[in-house]
Image 1: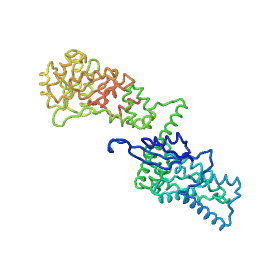
Image 2: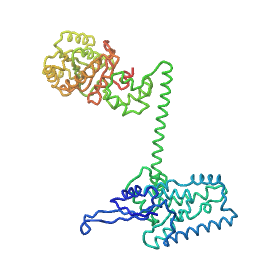
Image 3: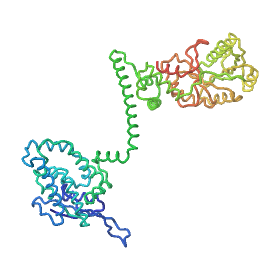
Length: 534
């Protein structure tokens, strides 16, 4: 046997040197750590020394040294006790047929805890031992040999150089083989359990092999870590923590299974529709068709679960999911709410050609005809004679007073004049969001009363980019609400969601035609979801 000492800064490097020079069959005999260098113990470096041995293939096993007599004596006693037990039972020890040997080996392999062997592979010391065990002796004999080594080392109080391979090989396989009768699992399991406990609890063991393995495991976590032993040890040490974790995992698994079942049913429904030639788009597809921005669609995917975002757009599930998202993403004011102790003053602002005057007439007619409210009309749109004439016609039909103002002071007096009314509606001239002078003029007109609720009127046919710019430029007037007109003139209504997403302004009305007072409705989450799922 070739015995050699290896020194390195870490145990990992020392083990690597052992494997590189002596091979994977090397057996670790002793490990120690010492300090080297420095001055009076300061700045010294730790050095790990590993003494390893490997059997010289060119020579036969050497006679066992006197220090190993205890090992051989223990092995002999074990053989004698097993032979006596076999003789008492009237069983034979030899002549095992080759077929039975194969059967017994296969049975033992099934009950040998691989984790116990894998644990020692971390230190690079058990590969040769396990090979010798597989060829010469069952696991029980090797456990007895290790116990004997412990006793010998404690007696000598120093590292013992043991030729383990020679000690194991000293016992013929014919003497240690289990009887010819079929091997039952029962006698094997206690041996396997004993080996697992010995591997998982190395504290009682004093041999240097166990120390080397434990130190190597601390320095580096190998990918081939023994899963069986680790899990069993954790389960034994922490039974209280294992139960909650398992229950939480079970609950998560059940939730995932439920979602998968829903998605499976949904995909089957979509498959049937596709096969019938009536492919139904999903909620996500519908949002893309409505020109909702990709940023909002991704936000929807994050907020909704997979079965909702992939639900057919014509399904109740898709409608409910979209309504749920709209409630969280935008504000909906549901029209105009009157005060109980003072008039509600509302001004309509916006660019030219969006239908402000017609929308104001619709709102007035709704409150007069449906609620019997006392309403007054004020127009500041003196740029267009037709606008004044149009509003005059509506006021005459509804029997409402109409005031024409040209400056902020006239507007203040008109509001004061009609303070007995429940609702005062103000029509303003169309302003270009790019004309800074007009924007400041409009802002100054409405600044005479902080209680004026300003509704920005926008057309649903506007491009999203233009709508965003429009809202930003009209922010000088501090609009509180947004009214979208002409929703009947376009098939895409994603602009409503795009403009109002994550903004403070709320949606108040939607208009869908020229008829007064029919073609206007207070905004609602359900109505907006319906428009987006067309």
